[in-house]
Length: 158
Image 1: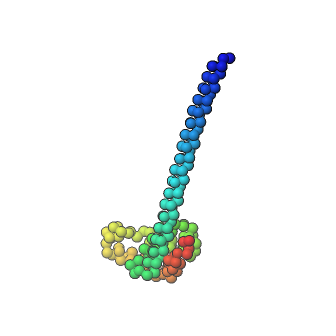
Image 2: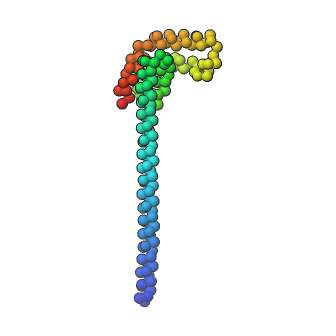
Image 3: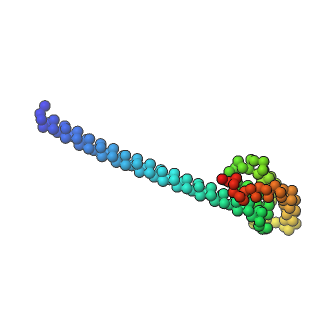
């Protein structure tokens, strides 16, 4: 074999090694960027989840406090709001005996129209629903207020 051929093959091998090394470096860079992007997406998702968690926690605390201190917030409305918030925040709380009253009031008033549908009701039907809500609120006043006091402290939400 001639030395020219040997040097040509060595040169070709070195060129192949350089090209493959460049491809490997580029692929490693791409993989690193993909890992960094994935980490950023995961961090953003965790931050969004934490923000939603904080929002729900604060909303539960505010609704519970409003049940206790704001005459505009009826027990029925408070239970409806708390049920939805707790279902989204920590559904297992609603399974505890102390919090069952929220589900009970919610379920017993779920047939009552809200918002625009309420406004469209005839006065006689509104009065009937209001009477039904008053009776339910009277029946569960102490239990709902106890739950509201507990939730307004924020302790069960930690």
